[in-house]
Length: 208
Image 1 (tube, rainbow, N blue to C red):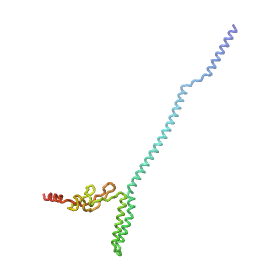
Image 2 (cartoon, one colour):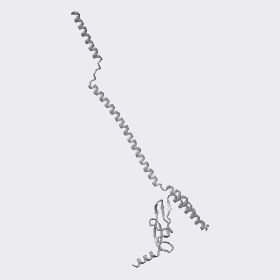
Image 3 (cartoon, rainbow, N blue to C red):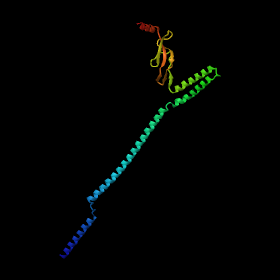
Image 4 (cartoon, one colour):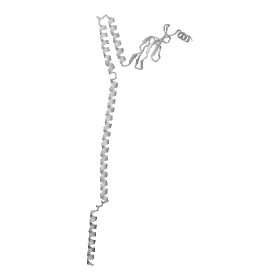
């Protein structure tokens, strides 16, 4: 009996010791308070990262707005300068003709100069070169004399009865017309031929 009781006591001791050792090996459970704190810390960290990212994006947006505003100001300034000095190239090309005309006037005004033929020839060359230079900028004279009257290009100042011209043909040019590229700059002022029939019709209308 004593041996059995001793064995039972020993078994009880072993089981208790085993139970204690098992409890020592199992991981301790984290308290809800600790877990909540960890979640809050994680959210704070994530919020700070997002705030920093938003700040970076906002700074980039401000820089882009400033660059766009500077670009608009630069374009407006270049546009204003372009309009202000749009004729700079043309005027620069016309300066030699001003010089030639001034020299011609000075030469023609001289008391010692009686050679008007040379003066006229010089003026003709200057005029020819002037028309050539303006042609580089799109200026083109309108051909009129001997051509059919076109109300889009010509302005009739008078009608004349001419048997050697077809009716509605331009007989004389009072002022030359010009186009700049495809646009009419100034119509040519002309006189237009009319046939005997047209003249008789006008007389009948006048008599009526």
